[in-house]
Image 1: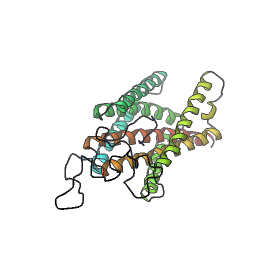
Image 2: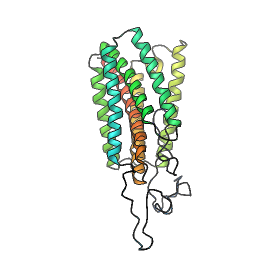
Image 3: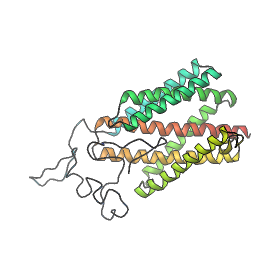
Image 4: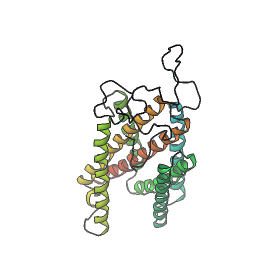
Length: 293
């Protein structure tokens, strides 16, 4: 099972050496329902037997020990790359807000930036190795898009972007707390159910967009600025929290199985896309509640 996020296409870590996506550490009794237990996980019987990033002192019968090397991904690597990527998004957003006044032209530029960001994200998703240039390019164009729409929302609902940032931080912090406390276990079944719901959500939203575009649904349909739109927004934010749990699990497994250091860029890429998803939905939700005041 590979971890995913709103684009449903990011691949897992270490695709060339056998580790892809997230999986639990081998445990007795976990074979039932685990796609990695019956041969799918190259480390299922012995997590160190075929792991190119781990070694075992066979002669002296020492327990398996991970090698001390700077080529393995660490949590510090993930934090640093994530900070760089999110910082690039923030810089792009601030510049767009400051240099592009709310107008039809800025909306067009925002749409173009969103398309470019999506293309770069898809290209990275299908690459066999992470490309910092593609990831940072995606972050920069995504920042331009977020800067323009944030300014647009702020011009109508003053303070909405700031509230959306606080909301995104609250959701992310709460999700991390729940994950680290073990209240949510990211298993293959959990991921399958969550992804089924997420895919169904995206399909319904795509159909709704078409109905609105052709005038069949009025006032945004399911994405209206009313109670129904608020309910859909809450569901979208919960899906964002679900994506975060997959990202957290993927990062933990990547570190545990010795993914290469440059794979930390994939972790930053996934976290950035998930946080952007949550922020955009939070921005809409804040606007809906502000409209109903």
